[in-house]
Length: 67
Image 1 (cartoon, rainbow, N blue to C red):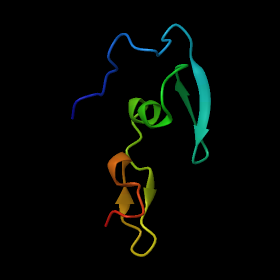
Image 2 (image 1 turned 45 degrees about the vertical axis):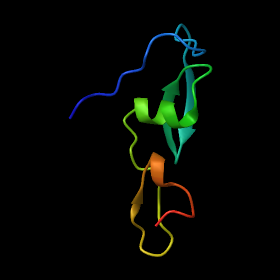
Image 3 (image 1 turned 180 degrees about the vertical axis):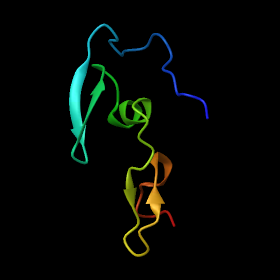
């Protein structure tokens, strides 16, 4: 499996890091980055689970309208 890397440029300030927590765990990100992008950069693939069957949900399947 390939490691995800961030593209250079944009509005993300890579000279600084910010600490944040998600689901009780601590991670690092950069100012200007989105939470989803920072989680993916930290290797987090599971964002939640479905209500009925508790199936894993990633970044593209966190909406309640998705199966």
